[in-house]
Length: 461
Image (tube, rainbow, N blue to C red; front, side, top):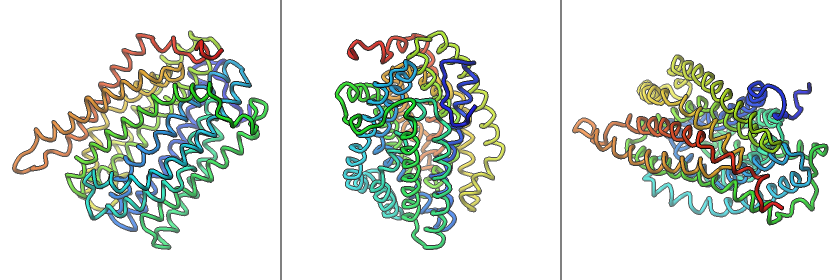
């Protein structure tokens, strides 16, 4: 079996196929997480803790601007997996071409509005004056080169929908090595500071997107990539929007909640901002199994629903979720065991290491809950139900997490802690994660997602 063969999830042991597909994706997500982590390590070591805080504070705004790509990527992955599962070559080719064109349009929009909005948003969030210029410089450069990020995410989503998670991994590993080398050269050697890590990131992202496009041009045995298919035809555009917009809104809601909470984070000062950056970087790695299994579940569900194998979907959903929970439990234990050493990679400030580790301990109880949410949401998305996960996100991120964060912090204000207890920020996140898992499980059992398959849509005739 060729390592670069696509994984046909319609046949074989469901869990084995899900794991086989997940492992390269997990490694790829680790590599992608290294983009941000290496940026943080380099600026923290060679520029200082304030520069570390600046890169982290830019994150929520950047994520908010990426919702267009998120929507296109999710919609494309669902459509590609279902058309691939149903062996509908013409529909598959037109979907991929439409996705490429829409990504170009989205890139142009973000290149224009991103730099214009970043400054006002940073001020709205009460970003400390000591780091605001660094934040704005970082965001402006990233937005100028946003097409690389957009095309990699969309094209790798197409590859995953076709069952190929290995190629995306290999191209991302190449880009990650480039990013690490350029980070060191631009920051440590050339002294470009926060701007240096931004330039390193966009150069690496363009490399990964170019490699992904090259791979797709060589898959003519599965679909056709010709100029006439780049025309964003109405039916495929509507399906991409119908499937992708709820996922884009979900990401936007999450990003908006992070932005709102970021304002509260900033009120605790530079030390807590820097600690939050470190925790979120470590958290990003711990969450990778959840995101990887969730994406694998989307492809698994899409291919099997396209092939009319609902019983197989149910078996994979159950056993795949239990497997993901076991993996997350092991990784969480390792993170807690070696947490202080990991946080010492970002900074040598003992107070910052202690604060970061205390916050990480709180979050550790919620990671298994996130596995449930991501895996079962992945099944629902793969079936074409992107609306239910969107509403769950609205409930947990907006209606629950934000009021909890502000409320718990307010309740813990004392003369000794005039701003409140910063740990309540993470307690509120833990509660929202756990609640999200419960709601997702209930909605999965209700089964609305079984009726939303793209290929059963009467409008596609």
